[in-house]
Length: 214
Figure 1 (tube, rainbow, N blue to C red):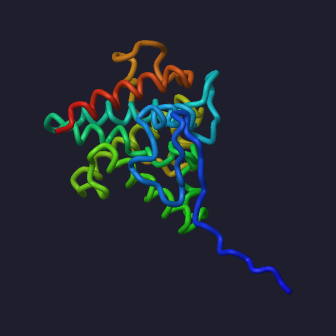
Figure 2: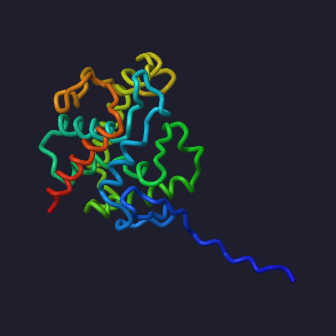
């Protein structure tokens, strides 16, 4: 008599540093701590992990750069919620999967990856009191700041030339001339931080903004 196969349960568990466990296929806002997100962001690298420096660039440092650009270029002071939206714009990449695919690769990862990314981002937004889907008026400046950061990172971190950025990478945004994080944290402009430092700085910014939410 053939054995009866039980249906597969929809689960993909990961154990987080806090001890909590997160089902990547069904994430909720209660499955992780802020420190899990900060450490995940610090350990998730951009640009395929390649860098002209000793360390690769983390999503944590990139997110702080995007926030700094958003604050500097906003026509009026940002609310705590808007600042959080800038800081957490890549948060889905930092929980469990810790994978930041380069943009041209994303379409090849398929609909399943898109749904996973969206579910994780929604869980993060709900955890910190943000709308599941940000208002269009918020999304545009975040995207602009993200592109501005990427243009500078491509040159000063990944080692592409300005011409290569435009011709090979298709990045049209003008790169920043100065690192917006240097006046805040010191250090060499555009030098990636070790994961421990990136986690501390991202975590402090997250705690400060989350504590300012109504």
